Every structure is written in C-alpha cells, then in structure tokens.
Length: 374
Ligand code: MG
Image (cartoon, rainbow, N blue to C red):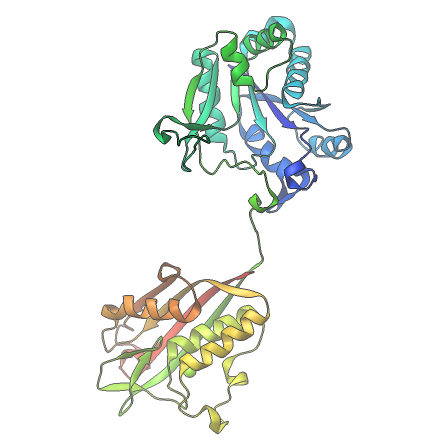
C-alpha cells in the first residue's frame, strides 16, 4: 500500500523552556530534519505533511522546499489531536476521497528524531494487516500508583510513528468529533484492532533539554616511539613492569607505549610533542616515569576541554612475548587516562625478524587516540 507521513511539530515545547524542538540541533541536522529522514528514505511514502506552529511556519516551509518528495506544511491546532486531524484532512484533500483506503498514514512526533526507516516500515506493514499499528517498548522503570507499584511485565511504553489505514482513521476522527487525545485510542474507540510492533529503545522522545544528545568535537592524534632494548634496565610499558632480563633504554623510564600515547594526545590538540615539553636535556626529567609525564599531558588536554574517548596502539617487539600482558596493559592505560578498559585496544606484533626491532634490539609503538570535547 502507498504511504503518507504526518509529522506533528506544532507542540510548544513547554518542558524544553518554551523553545521550538523542531529547530534544536541534533548533530549536523535539526530535530525536524532528522525526524523527516526515514520518511524521505522510505520508498512507499509518497508525500509528507508537517503540522507546525504559526511562528515556526516560515522556517519549516524553507526546510520542506529542500526535498524532491512533496512535503506540505500546515498550521497545526491547539492540541496534538487537532493537529493530527488537520493533517489527515489535508492528506485527504491531496489524495482524493476515493483513494483514501489505499493509503497507510504514519503519524510521527517530530520530537522523536531517531526513528529508523526500518521501524517506520515495520509499523506501516503492521497497519496493512489490521488497519492500525503502534510501536511499543518494554517499560524499564518501575511504575506505580500512589497506592502500589504495577506489574512491569504487563506495561508497555507507546512510541510513534503510529500507522493506520487513512480512510479508517479519518472516518473515526470525524465520528469522534476531534475530542480524542491520541490516534491509537481513537482507532480503538471506534472498534479498530491495533497491532503491536516491537519498537526501538533508541527511538527516544526529546522532552527535556537534557534529552538532547551531546555532540562535542572529536579530535584524533597519532604518536610513535621507539626505544633500545638493553640489559640492565627495567622493562616498563604502559606503566606496567614486565619481568624480562632486558629493558628499554632512555633518559626517562623509556615507557615507549606511554610516550606514543602522550604524543598522540598532544598531536590531536596541536600542542607540540613530549620532546618539546619534557626535553631530555633537562636533568629534572632524568629517570622520570611515563606515568608522571602522562599525568602532565592529561592535565594539558583537560585544560583544553577534552577527554580521551579511546586509544588504539600497536606494540612491535621481537622479544619478549608481550601478548600475555595485554589485559594488564590495557587496564593500566585505561586507569591512567580515566577511561574504561574496553576503550583501550593494544595489539602486539613481531617484526618478522626484520630491521632493528626484528633483531630484538628495540621496541616500537604506534598509538592513535580520539579525544572528545567535554
Ligand atoms: Mg620515548
């Protein structure tokens, strides 16, 4: 069956501090543009009607004109059901009375910008079977009345889009006189049998400004280091002491993994490198631990308003075998950077006996970090 999408965007956003939700930023797009996307992607959806407020009308028209698919903008009513009824009537005018029963109308709240084309399609297909379908998700919070808590197993939260046969819903709305609060209730009140579709927990409704996802800037940096492997030194990598008869040589503790990570962080923020900040000509850095230096670098990063999102590193060593220490190294690095161990990935390679690393004379590390703006 052919489809028509209705986006309800006439709400006042009183719980958002009276700002229009439709034009709040949601990543690179506005909430309205995000809400439109699945309807634009869905091939069966022929046209879209947006019900908006008088104040938002000009801006919504500007958005609607951008697309190849016909998008009509109407001024909604004082309540959600009024807006929905006006949109249904506008749809009927566009399609013509005779065609109404051949259409599924999917009514969606603009404030749910994370709808996928997949869920839209499933709900519309459900409506083809029984005339009406709604997406529902299990309730995770305990819900109670003042007297007692309710059995969570029998409770569901209803999402949008809610899809119906256009003729059935319009007839029901006309019979009801527009007093209903919700399209699904109206459909059921007029004897319709609703089909329940498994919704999507990410299809969240933006109610409070804190519901808006945060999209801070992400910066990526790369760092490398290599140190000689010599006798008479401790082998320290990622702040972990690894039992071996050789260790890494250098002015500091020569923790090549931490050095590479530090350079990656500094590089991501265009803050130079560790050679510049902690010169090996400065005696105060003699034997200094990588852990101490990382602490300093982390403070510099935080002063710029960033934190580490994840770290990925490659440690190349012909000897010793380091993979048994993976978990310990990842946990240590995570603790030092204030992130979770699953946000650290370290891989270990030999150099296939090629070059200085392959001859067991050195250990080399490459690291990449992603930093996120707080
Ligand atoms: Mg170094």
